[in-house]
Image (cartoon, rainbow, N blue to C red):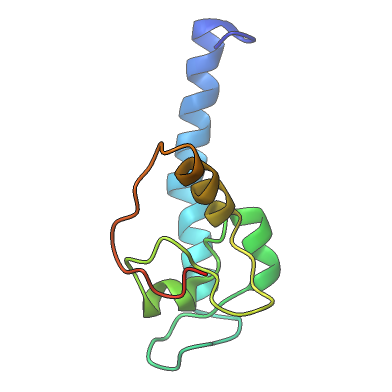
Length: 106
């Protein structure tokens, strides 16, 4: 808003919202049920580790289905969840509080 002004700022925010909610999120969901690796065989979702770097961990879909209320999606050594880094920083500043399963949060 400071750089673009209120009109263009709102346009950019709305475009981001529409692209994320109606394009990116369904595409990640579709990919996450079609191709990738499984840590947990109890669900049909898969993980795409490389894509997790670009999607804030959202493509660690198999892990999310195994522990849906866990705030951390990465569960194996070579998986990276960028959103978990942000959550840890917010926790350090006491700006958030964890709720839900505390599964494999180390």
